[in-house]
Length: 260
Image (cartoon, rainbow, N blue to C red):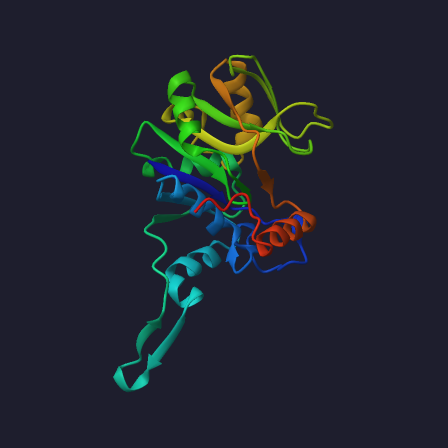
């Protein structure tokens, strides 16, 4: 099953960390947050990724093209046609990664439409490249398959500044509001399971379709969206304060999202 990760963001509210990096490449410890997200999926058995690239996508491409050179020592022997030998390089990933150029200024919904050709199963996992969690991905998928909506969203309870979810006791979503002024319940944690039917809600000829407002709100109002409640850890890297918090707990060896 594919894991689609939206990696096109600029991270304008986190400037000062590294203005040359796309948001998914901002580090937690020595690795970009994108790597942490992918390690979480891989730990649950999902290792086939599609990365929707946008702003400075070549930085993400370079990281994966030169993965071992980035994380390990290596020796270049110019006496042997510049042969490269990696020294103690960890063989820590067995992923398949498709890096798809979806446009620098393309909105989230349109990015998803542009990778439709890579989705060969009836469903796929979807998330953003700037948030970490210990959400139980196997349970999330099982919940989706049991309820059979078009989209299942993880519902979390952090400070309210994101997409608020109004839902029934059964889990059926009846309203999806993007970034309300105030929130008292669960919000979108950004870890989704999607049926291929979501592509029917997207227009291939547009660049400006926003997943959160144009697509998810419509699906919710049709009664075809469900919420999987997650009461564990969830944190996005939206500001410098978030960046500092995530790095602090990681350096202390207390990262709740590190399930590998």
